[in-house]
Length: 268
Image (tube, rainbow, N blue to C red; front, top):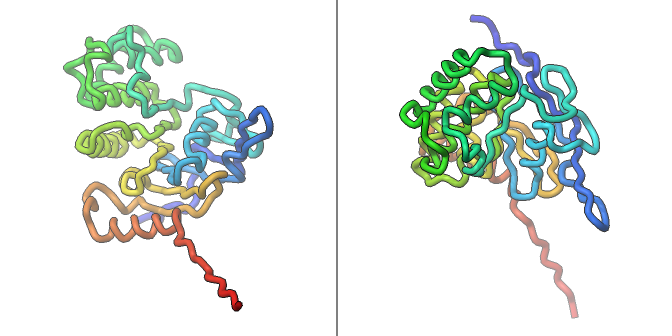
């Protein structure tokens, strides 16, 4: 059996990234000197408390935010703006174009960014929608779908492009617990089948461990690296297990270290 390469080529790299938000009075630093990388087929999850810059980092990787310092690279090329090599799935249910059917929403990026024939576009879109279980609602409009179905359609639209990096910003956060668990499992099935490279943002420690092959933990505002953890040995079979609970407690302690108080005695 061949040994695993400890440093395979990176699909995307974030190198000493710093992000600032200018305000009327001063500049607010959201992310400070953060670095991480992911190789082919890896699923890197950003995890940290609210305000640590997780979504800002994802938007910078997508090309929507310009770094104040550092660099982002996809397959060695510097990111200078949005591009078809990176596709985003957001938390909001209304990210689909409401005037287009499910099929048309999934076909849309192929018409915009490829030279495929109409027949190839249709076949590829239908095949992708079948993978996410939406073959029965191809010609339905988004307003007729449940929240979970809308997210499936958004995931299909992202996967159909064969982008280098799939970016997901808390895509299941607004769903009920049962639908969320179901879609987590479906995402893992798709990841195993298609081998896509993923950057995933979540507030949930358990979701981070189950989805990710790597966790990158961030401190409270401004976001700085705490540590990175390898979680590739965890999966759906670990739900409710003692080992998952133990790692969840370890991650929680890293994100929210106990506050020690010192009592000062004054002698009168």
